[in-house]
Length: 531
Ligand code: AMP
Ligand code: MG
Image (cartoon, rainbow, N blue to C red; front, side, top):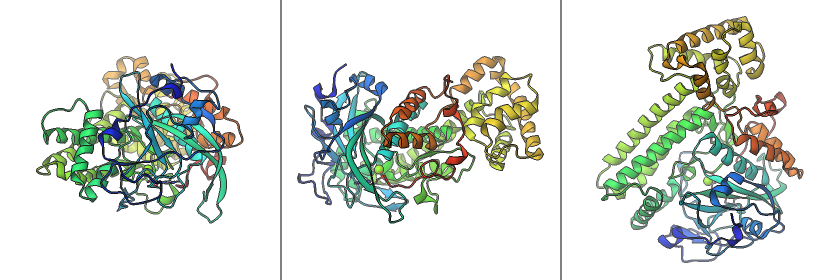
């Protein structure tokens, strides 16, 4: 284990790809380049607020003291050996519309490290100051959005959902002015910087940028670099290699969407510049967790009118975004057939993976019986009929296997209504329908091969239905405490969320449904893009 400040960094991305020749930080349109060199802007008084020990172990890094030399690096005030900081140039489709050049407006990559698994990781500061891609914004980030990104990155990793990671959360000692409610009343908030870590932060939008400008040679260079570095298993002659690569990107994106649906994650801003070429969850903004069954729900107040990025639309949007990527990769292929095949592969992989995960959530070997779709429909109809916390509903299904002797009324109360119903006992009709569904579910379960071993079935269900999630109201409590100088709430959340599937003593409050006070409170359910 070493301190960050003693490490030597690599810069393969920078070495392999063309740079913007201009070095000044001013905002501009950049041509014929994958990135611009830019140094982080120093901050007044940085101190470490949170650290991911798990990720640090993977990187072989020692936890620094609150104001150590390493914290200066994590705040953008100093550089380690070998760091050649850059901001990536990319474009994107935002809310269905071509947005042209976007780029890293407040993220600055520092360099690459070799992790203990022998593979490379890029370290990137988010909120480290202006870059050529900052457009009209300030290059900074507030503590509340940085804490949410830090917390959720590490929680998603523990949930088994592919994601970029977060190593540190550093307070800058400076304020950042934001109009959080977009109501013309900006206020100064504490600023922060997250150090994000991933094998690569390349997005669909990087390829869209070069395609839009007809920079076909650079696009090919970027594709070759990404494949060689991050898809080394793909070899052979081009364009077959590109076809296998695109198919693999489609497959990873499909699996990612299935995971999001499984845990109830709603990204909130699935623009093509927020889609990782490695199939990772990237750019945590106004994300949220589906609590009651409303497929049309989004946490993002900016998307309330269109609901383009609502929970149930995410798989479709994944396909739409891949189609934009496919469009930008045309120059790599003699004809479009491999691109269409990739998109078909996405649909098939998503459908298959989603169904398999649903079967696992229900404790079935497969959803392959004639009545299974009707069972699912009845379940969704009941979840939609009143306000039931969906994660708790799934988690408690094991009670129907374990508590065979409990009477239906008591089971209904203990496993469903008390823990999961926001509106309490919703009347005799719903009670009857739920009891009937429980009976139907049990009958279906008893026909399943998994019924042989109740303990194994329940253990399996517990490994796919999380007990603890970084729900927005929990994150908000951690934010309010941190803003008041107390990081213990965040630390407790981080510790529990390291093992989201295992019941932990004294943590019932973190597994509870959203309390009533949080229903309409800002940050506790819905969020704006202000960050
Ligand atoms: P997002 O949808 O939040 O991922 O951001 C879209 C674009 O806006 C990206 O190019 C970001 O780098 C840029 N951006 C967002 N916030 C800021 C900021 N405070 N300063 C500079 N650029 C920003
Ligand atoms: Mg983004």
